Length: 182
Image (cartoon, rainbow, N blue to C red; front, side, top):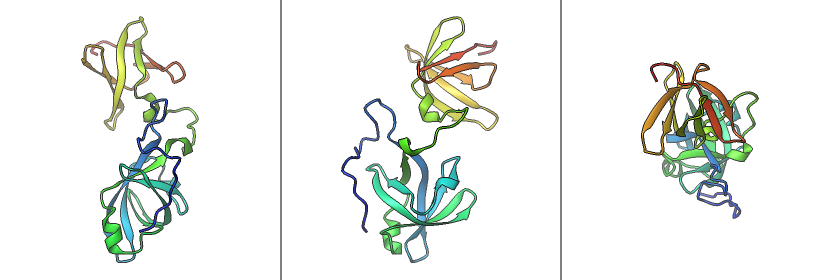
């Protein structure tokens, strides 16, 4: 199985600014057929960016590969990866996460990627620091921000307009309003 090499990549997954270098876009599944194709479960809101010629990185060591072909639709695709030419080779990749470089993703007009919000300081509109955003839970109706205080207490905040007043990425803060019941 051949693979591309890029000695400039660090395999830690974090940049010098503690920002992720790689972001998960999906996970490989079982081999499909005998020609090295493999099923792919999509974990991105932008599956149209998964296309032939795209560089991706596989597994915890972020091994670089290039997508040869893509077919299918919905939440699953069938991928062919350059250098993976048989069922046995594809089987070695089963369950590996698939990443792209975070510096290759396009900016969002009026929105944020989750990884940009994690670690931001959460402050109330009356000046109290609640803690840092450590997780975002997708519930279907609205996301929920999980904030951990300095004492380790978890605070759950619905990510709705009445609660989340302002997100300031350069200042690394999220301004919130504590509605009754929180």
